[in-house]
Image (tube, rainbow, N blue to C red; front, side, top):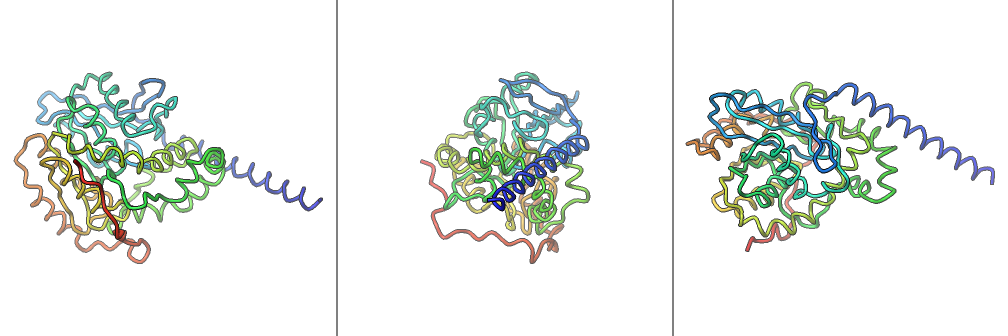
Length: 357
């Protein structure tokens, strides 16, 4: 009996120690990564955003950027804002629950709900219509915005999107665990921060692979903010629920009627590009798919010039994106970062995505 009591006491001490590590680590992370924008409350969620007002002689319409899983507004703002400064009004924001944005009282739990929050944020800032640019999970929110607010959508640019059902619908075990009531809360409050801190550099290598992670990327983009318990749970809820959402949403993509460009790499190790990107080209009338050879999951950082070209194209410009893609191909042809460490995604032998009807 004494051994049982001792074991229980040890476990309790370990839990409290891990909680302490997580709380102190989260506090330090926030101190190192203060807000860079302004705040507005939308339906109970405090949203953090950076609004770049329209320049006097803008040659592009307003642009709204939607970041992916595990990220925040800096992930697109840092590589793309300098290339578009002085050309367009821009809106970067932390999706609900990420970065410095609050999740809200249960009203931002799906891509369509987050799309509605974006529309209300645009209302507050006086942005009537915009081109929407979404990366990875942000692609699901981008398609949701076009479905929920077609009159406000001037064009769509998808970057390595996650938008269609994939065989089995599986996600990483820690997302499923964290989305489980009680157990997930305990995991996010104890193990997620220290374990995530140890694995973050290697995981980021595989997100970019075979391309090089930009110098100082993790610190500059404040990616460790996602390891805070509330952000980790929001991220897990989003990813764990994505399959169910796109299963219902994808058959309606054929209703989207707006200029659309999809940029995808043939070495993406995060999402099944030949399911999601090919599916968007197939399902959205007139969509143009731009393949980049030897590109991983991060066209916003590795091919920002191509992203700007896609924005110009959906805005009505005469841009040869395939020629631009070939220039990017040549620039990154020799990249081999993460070889031997990051496995290529193998396309499952199953139905890829339901045909839009």
